[in-house]
Image (cartoon, rainbow, N blue to C red):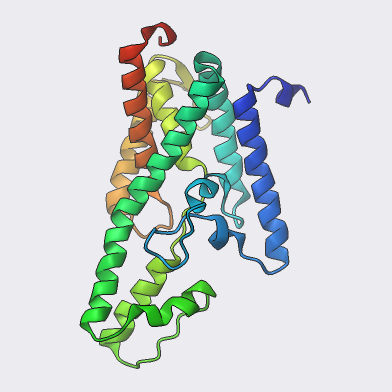
Length: 251
């Protein structure tokens, strides 16, 4: 109880929401309801996209990997609580949500274009992509009905991208990491393996550079690296703006 009572209010509420979404998703999954595709973020031109996913995806996590939510919530408590104490509840809440939205925007900016290309290719081949809508909405397996590699390939790509889903608080958390590194660049953070101290600007900076590299070189590893980069960009921009307009709350 002391752990929760010592957390700032917004950080505590975000932590609780993430846990509730995770437990709720597990319960729904046991009843055959796929909460991941329902509440996770799809590309805005996917048949599975719903406007509320812009927000709900921030509280969803990979059900097959408890480490996903554990690691994200560890970062939230470690960095979010500190930043909320510095900024106050309102500013921290704005920052967190803005970073999450920035993650969604960059993730969609590239994916929407790629999905449009896949859709255009099907039209070029004389196939109406809308014929797959019902199948995609039911999350059925691929049904390659044409027996024609020139059509089946693009059809599979279109269906796969339409079903692509982003979940997790990682985008917003990368905003927190970037913000912390700018505000407290010389704060020493302790690595676990090996257990050595390293300044925030080096550790977080290297992590961000790795995500930028991964967003280009590792596009098929099922991790939304672009979302991480998008969250970090928003975090950096907001800190620079706030630092310029109000230096009293920055160090």
